[in-house]
Figure 1: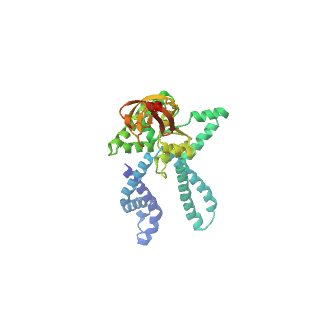
Figure 2 (figure 1 turned 90 degrees about the vertical axis):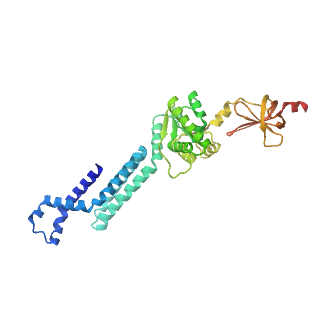
Figure 3 (figure 1 turned 90 degrees about the horizontal axis):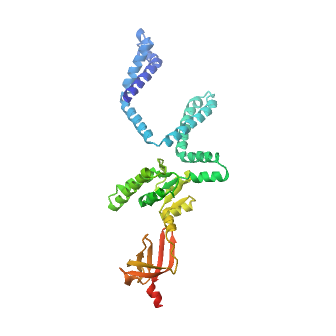
Length: 363
């Protein structure tokens, strides 16, 4: 069907060209004395046939080009198409008003070539600006709408209530975010960027068994979040082609949407803090709800393995907190009463240092 339309277009163009230009060609060929060729319909038919035959080899190339453009536009996110088109229209309007005074000049360079060049240039620039600045424009409009509806403390509450929660790859694979959402502690809209989904799919398709299992677990967690939980879940289909790292894309997305990055990645947490991006670290939440352990407190633990330093033993609490037991190497595989000496707590986790209670009594 598309090929027939292109062929019909060539026939129409050839007929129009035949009416206007064939009368100038016939005298050169000494056949202008034929009365039938002076009729407009004959000129149109002749021009259409000539143009169609000359451009017959172009039909397939043009059809393939149109189909490629169609597939590209269909695959592109709606925001890219809308803002790119708006930018193109704005650029063409600016070019139209600039060309009005230029066309008053009688020189061929001014009234023909320069208007065409300006139209193409400003149309291209308008499209590129609208396409590449779409995220900033969306953020600008959303902030304007929010400010126009609330004042003072009500506005602050509105902005807080509508902050997007942007999930990164590590927190999805971790899985605890689904339980947190289920309890209602994580409110608002959950945003899953398309580039995070692509990274998860890449991990799930990995040849390494461990990575493949982690990727599939992440996809299962996403299905659970989307189907079982009450939170509104949205997929952000945009991308930042000038940025390669997924973490950097997350920070950029959080900036332009005034959203909050949800992660358990210690390094991403620090990057967000350095760039003044709001971040929720699942590890910080886990550490906050862990039972408080104070120096001097007694507990009974089972030493599992030896530590890095000499004579150290390693034990774990039920929640996974690591306990470094001084002189605990000799008690591997045994339950041991210990006294807490100090506690080290960071975004990466919590570590408890202790020593055997028997040793304390001996001293």
